[in-house]
Image (cartoon, rainbow, N blue to C red; front, side, top):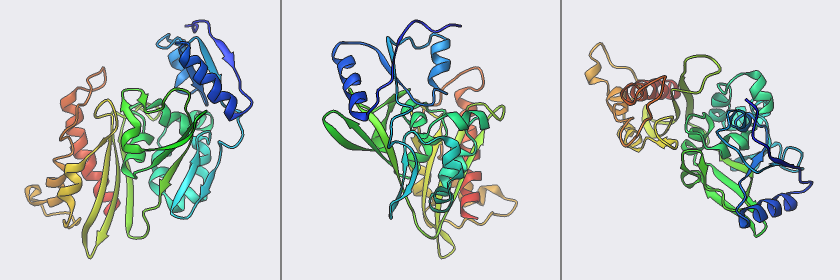
Length: 294
């Protein structure tokens, strides 16, 4: 299909972009921000979104790149998935981000799609929002009134709804380093290599004297936003990650991961119903925890 008519605006500075967005909000216009376009353009073509204008941030300076900043890694909003994936800093310091990014769509999309665009799109079926939630990332945003920081737990408000205020632009994301002793894994179930996750699990596990000292688990596509599996995190503390024998009922990891769907509200669509997604969440969480703690 052909998108509905819209105005195209390409600001030359971040200040101009914030001003354009603020003016559009005050006048009641529906304006969308364009970065890589891999999520937005399909919505436009299907006329699931029909903004009056697109504000293209793709050539703004200072919003691209990966930096090691001591206790965290900073990823600029316009950094492509491919650049994230090829970054030595990401692979060495925040490997969970690299593991999840490698599963995003296909190479063509990863070369065009942006890290910040995927986050700001706030699709619960996206792979990266769950990683941000599991790692307690911090989103740095800016408007004409200045900068502010938004914790990942507050950034994803609802389905396709980030906590970006009027005139705000996502500058980048601070990804904390968890340090030594942590293992990571991203487990994803999908129909084809390019498809959205039916369910995904981002897991970070710290071992302590042969047992699990701490775990961070976040789920993809188990509600209108990514979900932190707090019940599993609590149940895993002090548990030995070693597989049990033939009697699965005595497997403490499997028992703990049986709480993975607690508090979730998985959607129903053409690919899976809520019950199937709940089952997948439990199974995939167990796999992710074992891989991260191995």
